[in-house]
Length: 514
Image (tube, rainbow, N blue to C red; front, side, top):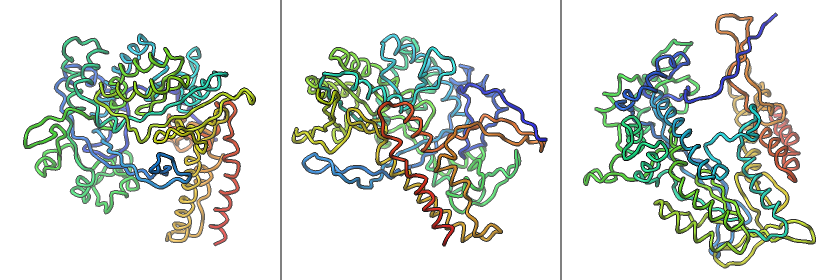
């Protein structure tokens, strides 16, 4: 009989084990023994030499409604590509950033509590759904969206306006001096940052990086992979896309950093203009463990001013990273828009006006509810062919739906996965040729795989023993939809996915009957 060992669940802290390849081997759980005292040593971090980031450009395909010349949005969505610049830090550096992010987050929480804006900032924070309960889950975008929708519904008899704003190139435009000022403020450091904090600040603002493609091209004949636990080998990998399948753990060792320097693969972000030695005065990298925390720290005063104005006028303010929403009685619409457009400039940032949307929610006494209408900012005309979209949901003043583009993306991924499965089913050269791996598909796209659960792993030394690990099956899109359906009152989410089982098996039958 096989036995099971249950490991007690541990609370997450700053120590993180990342599995992407970098310069140098990945860390293991045992490395915490020496890493923790090092990271917490102020003198050590004050002189810590950070490795260059690895830069990768991610292209995300999105389907957006086009904005016509008159400001109206098209009914159909058009495919667009959004590029994101992501930077990955070395595994030791990542934990240094993570630890200082934890320090700053703790100080930040105290600051926003004193300013009474804890309910306004929703991204990159752990906020318990029920603070009075120790085992309460943390809030997610479902809960934040629901808070906004319920505010509208609760203001019966009042005509409201909901205005959404988007900050242009948020992380790329954070001013270094303003960031440093707020950093000093929340840790109460006085005139200067302590040497350890300053070194972290300097290496997140004046960082260096290596292009991932260039690093791979140079070391592709000697990529370090893990064949067995703690058994490393250098092999040739033809394409960067194969890194994961080949179990790559590093592009090269730390000893290769001098070689990388000689090849001039390291690029400095320090200067805006190298020839004139003009320093770069804004921007932090997306992807580092500390970047999200710093973004919140940067926006403290703006959030405080926005919240004060909305409260004064009977409304609410909420910010999720660079997405902001303001809801208030309709007569304050102009005041709110002018405040956001002008005040944001004091923080060296800019509102992306093309993404600003205004939704009117007049209250209908006959139906005892609000109705949703979008205002065309170019013509000032009211149109009724759109719904209020916020954090992945659509709201008509009473009922809530998951964004139609998100549902379409779910079905698109399902279709694409079946196409890949069909290809590999009939083109592999193993004994499983012609067999469809159904379990993986059911787990990924149906309610069969929608239950979140901790994963059991076989004991490394005992074949008849299983360990309940700290890893999770997080579920799938159905999991997310079910959570939203349970959380948000008066929703029509269940009807959006009622045909997922039918569509799934239609695709399955095409493969099996080919």
